[in-house]
Image (cartoon, rainbow, N blue to C red):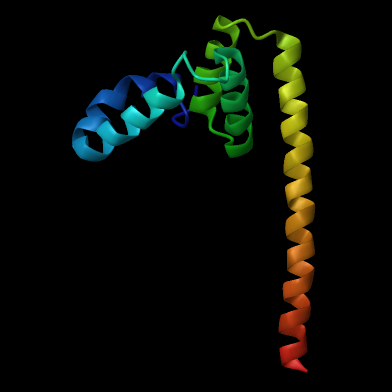
Amino acid sequence: MTDYQNPDDLKSVPAFAALAPVEAKAFLAFNHAVERKDGLIPPKYRELISLAVALTTQCAYCLDVHTAAAASVGASREEVAEAAMIVAAVRAGGTLGHALLAQRLFERHHDKTL
């Protein structure tokens, strides 16, 4: 195991939160609110959404936590794979969208240099 993104780091969250208690309390309250079981979106879908975001942000800690949570609320290996493929397609689409923006911005800046 490397020194980076070690699962044991999650054990230090309480000590870290104590360094900024006001902010940590607000963050944890928000986190608990979105993890609630009585929302219109069922827990399995909440975890698949969370996993999709973790894949997009490439947070290893979030991948660990939300993969385990997705499994615990009944998500299948196939659902996780399908969610990952959706993420890959949407992320690629986002790249294309930003490429179009880059082209437009290039033209704007290019026109200024002429």
